[in-house]
Image 1 (cartoon, rainbow, N blue to C red):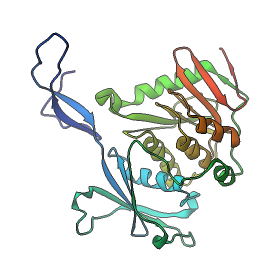
Image 2: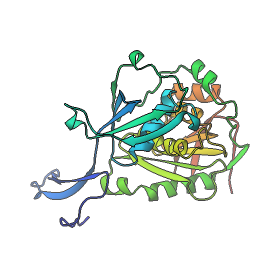
Image 3: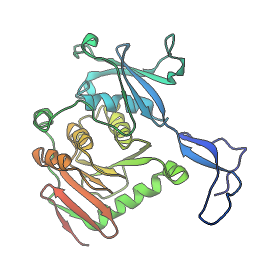
Length: 286
């Protein structure tokens, strides 16, 4: 791909020089390329340091709110008062971006009981809930997956997600996630990208929380460009989603959690098919 050195890279990407070495050939001359940015985002709650997330720039307020929803600190949109960027304190000049989340009056938060921690882009275990805890925390209105889904609609939704991943197309180094109607028909409702797949999901769900729609009111599902692990099932359940689907395979704990909470779990969405691991949905060929 030809890169115009005079044009700035898009948000979330950094321009670098790379040298390509192939077997049996001399090293090529260095040429420009793009990589996905991974950098820290400080999350404060009521002005207190809560966590440092390693993530890709963009939609920081959404990410902070989605992360805290998965932590259980924000159980619904009514628990959020405001979220906004804030300046670093002394000694935090290298932190980069920082967001402060203000809780609504009456929302319990004891800063003395929490120690700030680093959350890597490859690790999204938020809240530390067991499957039993997750079943108790699940919204009572969590919809069951639909009785039927068309394989063609599922495949179309994932092709649309892939085409919408502009940062991945440029860098080949980030994950994508999308919200879609529970029947998998129609346009994608929202798309997010990040070096961490759980961050991409948090950006989607945090946006819904900030919009006053968390847990989500309409039957909605989640598409993920990678594998499906427990923490992604956790996020989907707490958001009241109907089902989750991914290009990769699920973990055993993800399947167990989905079965325990009546969440549809579909994976290995590729070629001309999809594999069902949890839920009673019947896939039909159309």
